[in-house]
Structures are given as structure tokens and as C-alpha cells.
Image (cartoon, rainbow, N blue to C red; front, top):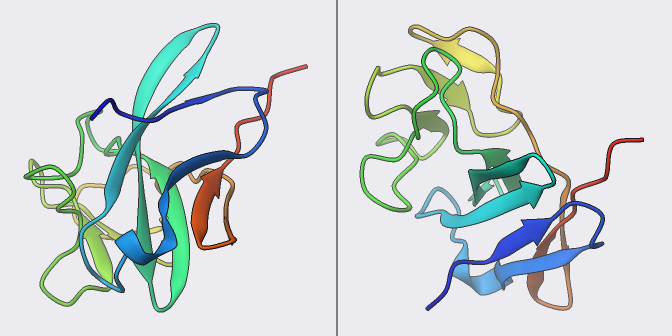
Length: 124
């Protein structure tokens, strides 16, 4: 299966079915792209709400998941960097502990018609 690529300016793009994201469970990885290049991203469900972030620790720019889609700590409330142990609140991406340097970069995400959609806006 080819990874989903969300392109800037393309409008809302489907990244997965809404049922693929269980509360505190595995996330879905995808790529975001613009004319400057591409970056890894992911979507998760936390406390019933879908969230999407760039897959980049703010301590050192490495991907968070220790295995593809494994972003949550054992509580299912915090996202954790497998490399450094930095933790982020899943609800808003804010640093919750460890060696963070700010919060995760959030992406616009919504659920519609049983799908999870992400949108990237072009820079003016």
C-alpha cells in the first residue's frame, strides 16, 4: 500500500478511515508535501478526538514512533518520543515532560463521512 501524501493547497485529503483510529491506540502515518519538500506526519485519536501532527520530536528532529504507528505511552494519554523520552499531551501536542523544546506542530484535521481528513494550506 502506498503511503498517503497530503499536498499543500490540495484541499482536505483523506488519510484513513475514522474507524482505523482507536482511542489511545495506534496512529496512522502519512506524508505532507509542499514545494519545499515532504515530511512525515501522523494522526491519532485521544479522548475521542482525532489529532494530527508532524512526526518530529521538538528536542531533536527525529520521528516519534518506536515502531510504525506506536506513538502513545502506556496510559494512552501522552505521545512519547521513542528516542529521547520527551512526552507530549496528545490533546494539543504541548510538551508534558522530558527534553522538549516546544510542542508538536499540529495539522488541520477533521472527521467527515467516517473518514479522517487533513488539509495543508499554501503559504501566501
